[in-house]
Image 1: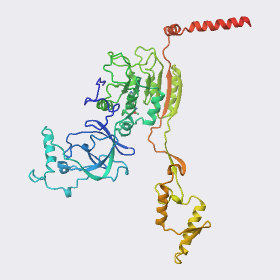
Image 2: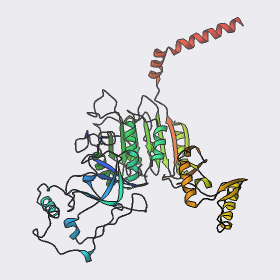
Image 3: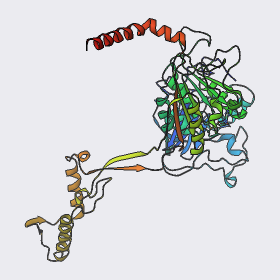
Image 4: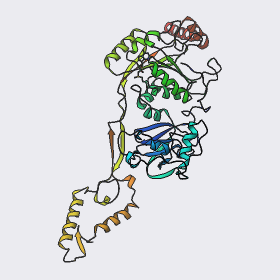
Length: 495
Ligand SMILES: C[S@@+](CC[C@H](N)C(=O)[O-])C[C@H]1O[C@@H](n2cnc3c(N)ncnc32)[C@H](O)[C@@H]1O
């Protein structure tokens, strides 16, 4: 399943490594619908299922013709459009919501429904208005294999919006199609730094699953596209990925190709526990610096990761760093036990307990009344008594029409609520609100991570007699030791 394609299928470098200044047609974009709800999308100019506006993506926050998403700055907010469903509106199948687990977010949720009661009789071409005609021609042109006529300009709907983000491993992880449990960003960022993966590194990953870790690893090792796998002039970063579930391999292979990552990720369909990590005879061995095993029984794969075997996939010139990702402590114990018996060192285990911490200033007090994001109740007993006194006096003096009230020995004018709020608003303009209030922090427990135990270990570099001799020649180890010994012996004699 390996592929030596240099770039994406449309001839562009990977959008995960190169972000254009504006969004482009045929490129991957991530639609940010709301927090924790993202949708990956390839922006298209071609006709789509009979919409007059061309390709359209429907979300719970409205319909978005791709023409409104192309040629704008990344991060832009895009408002939903009114779309002309054209011939699509006459189809029997109901228009369904494409996405949308929970409410909130990008404006008022909009659900496009094709109600059969309001469906009109099919019109002939002569009956169609000038604006309706393109929708029909669009469909006919597409079905005849002719280029579609120009799409209609989208009209803003007035409710619902989304943001357009460039693809990154983080946004991809948050939006990808889950074929398996995936490794989330808090885990893979920690794993990659503990494995010391950097541009130019080679990493082995098994199993590839949904490709979440694969994308993050590809970015971490990327140091340019290699023109050929046999080019030895520069060591290019590489991810050797293994997966034994065939449909997952096929889907991931297609995704990697369309994301321009085929040249960085070498995907192999293989059961690594039984068949190991060796590649085809014509392919040089991976020479991995780091290994990540996300398998149910990692210790079964570890026997193929020993040094001194003919087809060892490890870098012989340096230490190899390992991480295994296991959901239960029994798996951890079997892995650690294997590592201890097989020359692995620096064995440790940890668990990532990620929490998003919300740090903000909490402002409480009557002086905050009418301002946004505050708790406008009395902050102290004094403030509460002052307010009670003011209210009581106001009531009792309502009929006597007294103009002032005594607060803390001062004569204060009785204010209406509107006057008080206006005064607070004016004062707030000169206050340093960002400095006021108590600094509080709250952790959010619902952050998405896949709680697992991470076992780390290091296999020292291979070291033989030749390496010992080479080190001696380079560093003069024998001479220095000899000199020191000599001094010590001479010193001893003197003493
Ligand atoms: C939890 S998923 C991996 C998720 C992946 N790391 C990600 O971030 O998307 C585990 C994967 O390992 C694969 N797998 C399990 N045993 C395997 C084996 N012996 N050889 C290769 N792949 C294996 C499974 O098919 C599954 O897709």
